[in-house]
Image: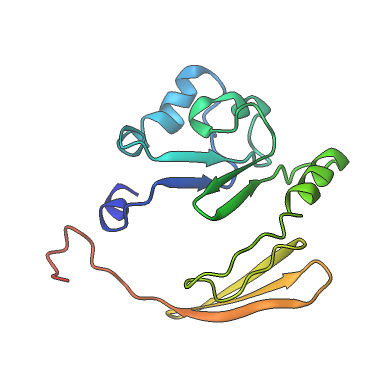
Length: 164
């Protein structure tokens, strides 16, 4: 990840669950997270975690995971609103919270926005074929909201000696 960040200087990482397999003692957090990601943490890269089915619920209190004690939460980065959900148990309280949050209906078109949909829940299906990524976003009611193809362009690694 450190070498990748040298080419593309990302500011944050989304953790999709199953974050630690080492245990729940402070030394386990050090061994399983803080030590391996030290260069990124020292560079002020933020990590946003969600709990997976193998995670302990007390991981939500681990400060570098930025969960602030919550099983589910939202945060913004620029114009993008992220929702970190507890998909292990979508209780009615969490569902109501999410439904309230996605009623912004305030998506503003921009030069980099091909399409937008912020009036209901949706999901995205992604398929990779060679250097192409095909995607389709479908609304909760089954209506296709957006679709397209993105062709992969490979940037040379910083230590490969290749010139740009």
